[in-house]
Length: 610
Image (cartoon, rainbow, N blue to C red):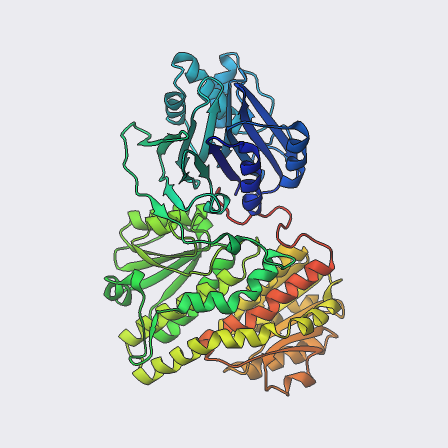
């Protein structure tokens, strides 16, 4: 969840590091810090709060040096303050370190170091690691070897960058379970936990794998395994523009990303359908189609918003392809000894491709012999590299912590996989062509919804002071209800629950009164009349109802207090449309409450530690 950036070259590293941390702030914003070697002297500047606070301190201190590391923190061990912020010095003051992850055996290491005379000033697990490196450096003051020996004693996850006063010409790095990438420049090199931090400086990157360690200098780099075998790593080209990670005139990244959905959906579907044959063509699954179609069972594993997309996928695969599906929280999946065999396919969904729980569950599924597929957004991410095959969603960078365009693109990919499987089984060409035509028309329908942003804003104003919300949907729209509630919780801090509409009478109806709004996802589908009955039940108890309904539905307007209309599309694609008014409503309510939409409290974009 935290962010790391590093630079070594012939320029002043401080502004480069600050700029990189701003690009990474969505990964953590409890505190931030820089560590720089300035004329042979290690200096650290840290600040509680956002990167802008750190920037002001750096400007006033006049920090200057050609090598440095930076960090933006999401607290795990120790409260957010300057003492616990990174970088951390070793007790000797010679070594500084930034760290993403959790050192699980830090208490044992700390006790050992205390017995050797080390003293600690912070509450973090990271300080144990930097002092352990210092301990090994006393025996053999080769920074690379000291870091390597220290990590052999570590249990846990880490992405680290280390600087030493005695070796100011290199930054030592290592990875295990927390992402890290090297960026290659001309007479300068970079490191980062996310390519967003360095994309404006270089497009040439090397991804580190777990249990790999290395260093960068201004002209060179070295990568080895933790057991000291040299590696020759592939250099990758990043296909990303700096404009993609700026707000482009929008007040918030979240609003920009909601408004980008017509284009992100076009990018997700581009080149992946063949209308004449009514089929989907997914290059990332070539060679695995038969095994996927013949799966005894499909398990979809994900967290958060991606888990809601997985629930939509369950409905699609079972209804159209006739394959049994189970949806699992990745955070629980690996810990309950799941029954998986070689006839199963396990699909892992993650926007970042770095979600720690999802990646750990993937490794467990692979160990048990299942076909492992990834649905991710970030090219070259850990889940993408670890999967047997998979599909990129190509939604473009998503900076806002509350996921929006990734969710709709994930559903689009699941719909394309569904079409692929259904056509291999019993779906006719004509049915396949009907779905493809609906897919191709979908971006324009999204644009129609977005044109009503001001109407959605005005309706949202009626609910900005609500303390609780209930979101209800049936069938394929139950996951949409969950997602709508999650969006509201994440950024407006209003308690909200998503429920299957039919379950309302089994408990939640006790909460209904004139102060608790209920949002119904109510398109005219097979369960439409049932949903109308649920609306009647809420109205009979003085509840306020907001309905997401079809554009030609006049009946529902006589029941609901407020109605937001959406165009019709094929049933399997409807969640992509019904969720968009809910995204905008959550956004507008949060703005009306004066909250930080892009950086909600206690949350970070990518959960890279368990």
